[in-house]
Structures are given as structure tokens and as C-alpha cells.
Image (cartoon, rainbow, N blue to C red; front, side, top):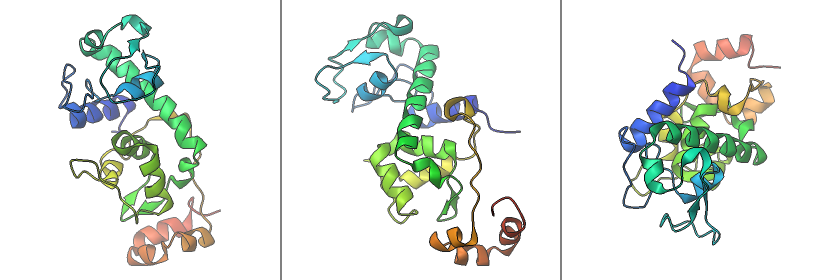
Length: 205
């Protein structure tokens, strides 16, 4: 069965918090999806005038959908899900503005870049690290404080249908020159069945 947006959000919650909506970790990240102050501000639930996002939660909640305090947020798993969707939609705008969506369909170190993989990766390490990873075609693979790499999240969260967040995305079409520029000739020559599939159809203009 196809993996849905709800499946993506459930997997993200399990990875981030083991599905515990009331948890706040030692760095101040809160809830199912371990969202910080900046994320909840992007989602419209929180305002911090100083813009010093240290997850001290000294800003103000906006009251969006009845969430007036951090306690309200932690006690409302449904609203945490809505906040995460709002945040991911905002993130996708940043991703497109930075041109990161143009890398969809690339294969880095045997890991395909997909929209859901991008959303998982940016959740872990943010936009700047995502830019570095994609523009280097996987040669730069940042890690978080626990040693988890961006590419691990790219792979773990790849292949979900997140069109409810990203909108419809046209599949990328490659010329043979594109593949050479990406350094993928050797990869495809080692995987001739995949090479034949790509050579015969939709991956080429």
C-alpha cells in the first residue's frame, strides 16, 4: 500500500518522541514532533519578539486553535499534528525558495531524494544543512548532536505521499548530460537493470 501523509507524521512522531505528546527534551523541544520555539512561530502558534530561539518558552502563545500555553500544546496531540502540518507547509516554502526541490529524484549514496525525505531531513538539521547536503550531492552529510546524519533521515522518511503539504510535484526529467553532471554514470552502470529502466523511459527528456 502507498505510504500516506498520516503515515509520514506517525513515523516522524515515533522517531522524534516515541509517540509521547507530553514530552519536553533537555533542549526544550516539545511534543510528538519535538518542535521548538522557531517551529511553532512558523506554524502560527507562538511569538517570541526577541527572536532568540533557545526553547526557553518565554515568548507568548497566540491562542491559535485554543493553544494558549505550552501545557495546552503538550496536552493536545491533535493540535500538535496540525501544528506540524502547518510547519511543514511553511518549510516547504523555504525549501522551494532555496531551490532544493530541484534535487528531487537525485540519488546520493544509494539514497533517493524524495519530497518526504527532504521534509524529514530538514526536520532533523534545518535548511542550511539540507542545502549543503543536496548541493554537494551527498558528499557533505551533516550530523546532529546525537550522531544522526541528515542522509539517515532522508532515507528513513523517503517515499511517503506528502502532496497535502507540498502540492503536486512534476517528476524530474533527466538528460544524459544531467546524469553526467551529477556523477551518476558509474552508479547506473553498476545497476544495469535500473539503468535500462531509466534509459527506456520517463527519467529522460
